[in-house]
Length: 78
Image (cartoon, rainbow, N blue to C red; front, side, top):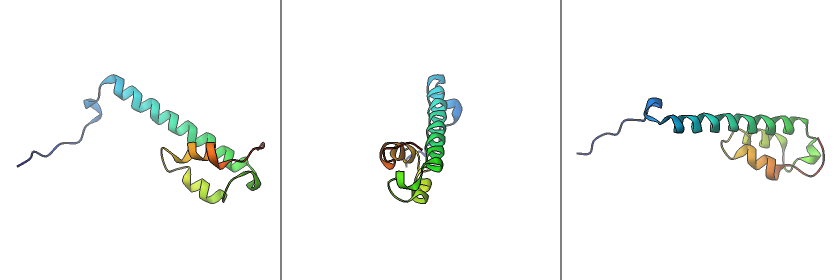
C-alpha cells in the first residue's frame, strides 16, 4: 500500500525557494494592481472587449493581468 504524501510546509522549502515565492507573489500583486488601475482609467473605446469581463479576468492568476496588458488594450492614452 502506498504511503500518503504529506503536504509541504513553508519550512520545508529552502530559503532561496521561499524568497522566490514571496517575490513572485509581490510581482503578481503589482502587475494586477497596474492592470486594474489602467482598466478603471481607460475609456471603454480603448479596451478590446467588455470592461467588466476584463475586470473579472484580471483576477485569474497568473495569466489574467498580463493578458490584459498585452492584448486587452487598444493604442491610446488613458
